[in-house]
Length: 314
View 1 (cartoon, rainbow, N blue to C red):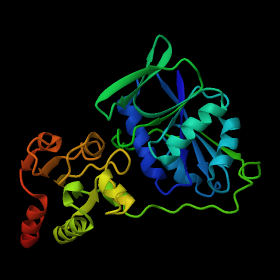
View 2: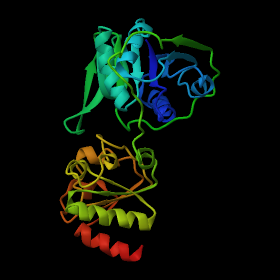
View 3: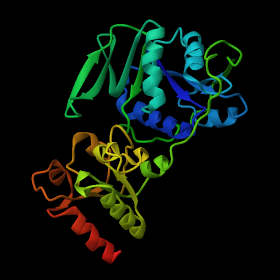
View 4: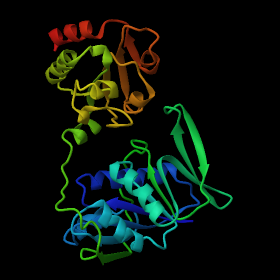
């Protein structure tokens, strides 16, 4: 069964998302599937060489929109993807939104957060994490076309296989209808996201920090130690730190060489964001907190007291 890849070439994270999808196909897609083409939504065709260099497959289709806007993209994709069986999208906001909406417009199915795709009895089967990431559920998809986005952070980035492009097609959709109600639009990259995703040394704070002042102490220690810093979802939702600093399935999926966790219980949503880290060291006064058993080393102590002692050494 064939599948195609769909990417947002208007995004500044295009290259990284392409590398993640290559890794997902290599490690999480059954050998029964055959990659057909990479479909890239782009402002125009001026960066054709760049898109060709980062194509996930040997066949590439560039769809010019003049700029990314979901309604216009969906209108164009409904025509461009009408003959596709399966479309694979990245695990970012673009992938999650477009996979569901495009699946509905094509009269097929939309699926998000996929961790594995395989074929059983001629039907695609998708795995995804459920029950707060504690269990894996398998879904056999009966209705095609299928548009699916991968789970955020599930795939290791992979370089492009050294195989020359066999075909590049340019499709101009800049003048077609869609999104007329939008007066203007643009993309604003979220600050620090790329840095946290690629950080080698990361400090993460949980509700044990006690409030904004505790977050500031974490931030000062990170700056002294040359580390990046992030927080758990409860901390971000409480307004103690910016949302772009949130680590976990709802935020940034990191893979640091070293991760220090202060006052975080180790809930599944947070742990998923640091699980790929090489070394995890936790500080928590609760010796029974999940993070204690998930870490390579742990200190059972008040995280703020430990922060202060480390600040003296930094």
